[in-house]
Image (tube, rainbow, N blue to C red):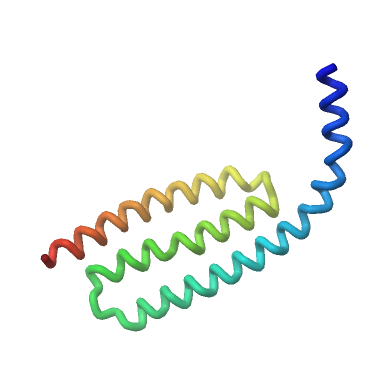
Length: 112
Protein backbone atom coordinates (compact mmCIF):
# COMPACT_ATOMS: atom_id res chain seq x y z
CA UNK A 1 0.00 0.00 0.00
CA UNK A 2 2.86 2.43 0.76
CA UNK A 3 4.47 1.91 -2.65
CA UNK A 4 1.17 2.49 -4.45
CA UNK A 5 0.73 5.84 -2.71
CA UNK A 6 4.29 6.85 -3.51
CA UNK A 7 3.87 5.95 -7.19
CA UNK A 8 0.60 7.88 -7.37
CA UNK A 9 2.14 10.90 -5.67
CA UNK A 10 5.23 10.97 -7.89
CA UNK A 11 3.31 10.39 -11.13
CA UNK A 12 0.50 12.85 -10.34
CA UNK A 13 2.68 15.82 -9.40
CA UNK A 14 5.91 15.20 -11.28
CA UNK A 15 4.76 16.95 -14.44
CA UNK A 16 3.29 19.87 -12.51
CA UNK A 17 6.46 20.60 -10.58
CA UNK A 18 8.62 20.13 -13.65
CA UNK A 19 6.57 22.78 -15.44
CA UNK A 20 6.93 25.20 -12.52
CA UNK A 21 10.73 25.10 -12.28
CA UNK A 22 11.48 27.41 -15.19
CA UNK A 23 8.98 30.13 -14.17
CA UNK A 24 10.28 29.92 -10.60
CA UNK A 25 13.85 30.45 -11.79
CA UNK A 26 12.80 33.38 -14.00
CA UNK A 27 10.75 35.09 -11.28
CA UNK A 28 13.41 34.41 -8.64
CA UNK A 29 16.08 35.71 -10.99
CA UNK A 30 14.16 38.94 -11.56
CA UNK A 31 13.81 39.56 -7.83
CA UNK A 32 17.46 38.64 -7.26
CA UNK A 33 18.56 41.15 -9.90
CA UNK A 34 16.42 43.87 -8.30
CA UNK A 35 17.89 43.07 -4.88
CA UNK A 36 21.42 43.09 -6.30
CA UNK A 37 20.97 46.43 -8.05
CA UNK A 38 19.40 48.16 -5.05
CA UNK A 39 21.91 46.85 -2.54
CA UNK A 40 24.90 47.66 -4.73
CA UNK A 41 23.56 51.20 -5.23
CA UNK A 42 23.23 51.57 -1.46
CA UNK A 43 26.73 50.19 -0.93
CA UNK A 44 28.16 52.65 -3.48
CA UNK A 45 26.34 55.51 -1.79
CA UNK A 46 27.96 54.58 1.51
CA UNK A 47 31.37 54.34 -0.15
CA UNK A 48 30.92 57.63 -1.99
CA UNK A 49 30.16 59.54 1.21
CA UNK A 50 32.69 57.78 3.40
CA UNK A 51 32.73 60.28 6.24
CA UNK A 52 32.77 57.90 9.22
CA UNK A 53 35.00 54.99 8.22
CA UNK A 54 34.94 53.37 11.67
CA UNK A 55 31.19 52.82 11.30
CA UNK A 56 30.61 52.67 7.56
CA UNK A 57 33.02 49.81 6.84
CA UNK A 58 30.86 47.60 9.07
CA UNK A 59 27.65 48.87 7.48
CA UNK A 60 28.99 47.97 4.03
CA UNK A 61 29.96 44.51 5.27
CA UNK A 62 26.44 43.92 6.56
CA UNK A 63 24.88 45.30 3.37
CA UNK A 64 26.80 42.72 1.33
CA UNK A 65 24.51 40.08 2.83
CA UNK A 66 21.81 40.99 0.32
CA UNK A 67 23.89 40.12 -2.78
CA UNK A 68 25.24 37.00 -1.10
CA UNK A 69 21.76 35.75 -0.19
CA UNK A 70 20.33 36.70 -3.60
CA UNK A 71 23.08 34.86 -5.47
CA UNK A 72 22.77 31.86 -3.17
CA UNK A 73 19.02 31.69 -3.69
CA UNK A 74 19.07 31.91 -7.46
CA UNK A 75 22.01 29.51 -7.88
CA UNK A 76 20.39 26.96 -5.56
CA UNK A 77 17.08 27.25 -7.37
CA UNK A 78 18.72 26.96 -10.76
CA UNK A 79 20.93 23.95 -9.94
CA UNK A 80 20.28 21.93 -6.81
CA UNK A 81 23.69 20.25 -6.96
CA UNK A 82 25.34 23.61 -6.26
CA UNK A 83 23.14 24.22 -3.24
CA UNK A 84 25.50 22.69 -0.65
CA UNK A 85 28.66 24.62 -1.64
CA UNK A 86 26.64 27.84 -1.88
CA UNK A 87 25.08 27.14 1.50
CA UNK A 88 28.51 26.69 3.07
CA UNK A 89 29.75 29.98 1.62
CA UNK A 90 26.54 31.75 2.68
CA UNK A 91 26.89 30.45 6.22
CA UNK A 92 30.49 31.65 6.41
CA UNK A 93 29.50 35.10 5.22
CA UNK A 94 26.57 35.12 7.63
CA UNK A 95 29.01 34.56 10.49
CA UNK A 96 31.17 37.42 9.20
CA UNK A 97 28.10 39.66 8.89
CA UNK A 98 27.16 38.93 12.51
CA UNK A 99 30.70 39.83 13.53
CA UNK A 100 30.45 42.99 11.44
CA UNK A 101 27.17 43.96 13.06
CA UNK A 102 28.68 43.48 16.51
CA UNK A 103 31.69 45.57 15.51
CA UNK A 104 29.36 48.24 14.14
CA UNK A 105 27.55 48.38 17.48
CA UNK A 106 30.86 48.69 19.30
CA UNK A 107 31.96 51.47 16.93
CA UNK A 108 28.68 53.36 17.45
CA UNK A 109 28.52 52.89 21.22
CA UNK A 110 32.20 53.65 21.78
CA UNK A 111 31.51 57.25 20.82
CA UNK A 112 29.05 57.62 23.68
